[in-house]
Length: 281
Length: 132
Ligand SMILES: [Fe+2]
Image 1 (cartoon, rainbow over the protein chains, first blue to last red):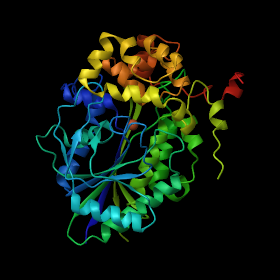
Image 2: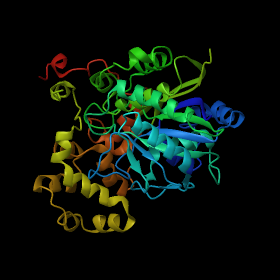
Image 3: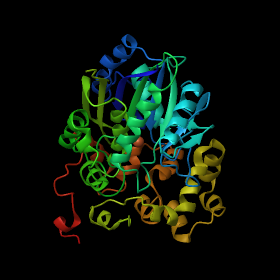
Image 4: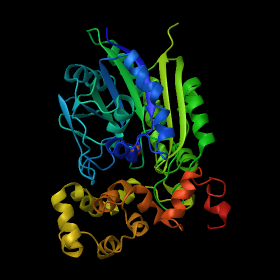
């Protein structure tokens, strides 16, 4: 049986990717943030997995406005890296997990989640920046990846309830796969940030910390938080945090908090990062 | 369920990219998407008006692009992730571009971020601020 062994959440700020690519991790502006990921880099080495399901959003990098899937899943062998306007990041392509992703996608659709299926996909900073944070700058990424893009850009976004339920369905899908595969699930984006309008630069760290607490301890309550509250309290782009609920749903009822990190700011964003593992009872 | 976009109008200094705004901004945003190749970025930077003439955008949308008036582009249906392709083509960072939508200089904005960002107090509601 395949198994979800850990959950990882992290912000996915594009400037962090540029800092890694330019080797700026030790510069005074960046050092305190990158130091917060040192524990995690070691932890993922000590606790390896075969496949990472990475829940993220595309930022008008691959998807234009022709097609805007609410939930999608990549089932390809390989994912190239987008040119987001600055040129392609100098990082390796991302290797897919076609067998497992095909199984999960089929299971989710059978389970009433109307996934859009992606046989071709290029991935952007939403997916690659978390990988750079956890894995550094390898010549080849250490795991296979299943990208799970969510629309958080255009309102209405999927509800918190739907996101948590999707996570639960992912757990069922993974556990019904024959084969001894260790899987991690990642929820990316957030935390509080707003990158548009006169209110740009909004950061609400107390709200972010409460969100983390609730995600860990009472996701069944947190799922009902309306999007309007995310927008007001965590900024217009803070609504990305609904993707963390998908991660949480896939971990089961109770979790162990392995690691937590907060840092303000990276670029315009409040950075938050968690490592959780399912608590077996 | 009936969609309700009305409450978004009370958030100060914020334009929520709804499905309705997306319809209005479709061609503006698609123009932005075209700037994902080096070839198109070069053509756009060499002659903006000529490049924009190839797109069925409104004159107002085109003028906002030429003026690099990002707030105006948001008002006309643009979304910041799409608009980022414009400032990326000029090698501008998010912080630099985003600061132009506020009442601060890029330096002042950056200093605010380093000091912990914009405090939410006073920024929750237009009604509270006496703007509505
Ligand atoms: Fe994002």
